[in-house]
Length: 164
Image (tube, rainbow, N blue to C red):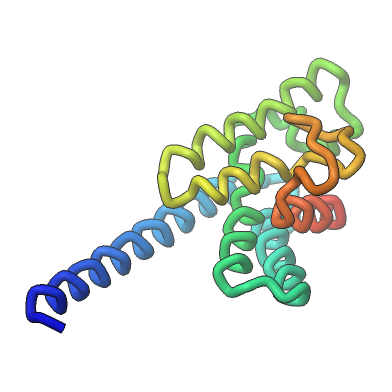
C-alpha cells in the first residue's frame, strides 16, 4: 500500500468515527427530549421500547448493526409527540375521540420529518414511520400489509403495544 493510500484510509476512518459520534450525540439529545415529554409514564416508555426491541431483535438473530438501529428507532418512535397536548398523550390511542385520534396520527409524519433531517438517521426514520402499521393493513400512515412493513417496525410495534 502506498503512503497516499494509507493516508486516505486513515482519513476515511477518522471521518467515519466522527460521523458515528455525531449520530450517537444526535440520538442522545433526541432521546432526552422524548423522555422529557413522557409525563404520563412512571418510567421512560421510549427507553423501555428501545431496550426491549433491541433484545427481541437480538433473540431473533439480527446483526449488531440492525439491533442498534432497532434500539434507536424504539427510543425515538414517539418523538413526533413532543409538544402534543396532555389530553392526547395521557390516553391510549383507542380511548381518543375521532378528532383527537386524527391529531394523534400526525405524530408519525412529524417524527419522520424530524429524523429525516439527519442523513445518518434516514433508515431509523423509515422504521419509526412504520411502527403503527399492522399486518392486516389496518394501521397508519400508509396502510402497509405483511411483508411491506419493515421487520424493525414490527418488533417496535409489538413492544410498544405490550408496554402500553
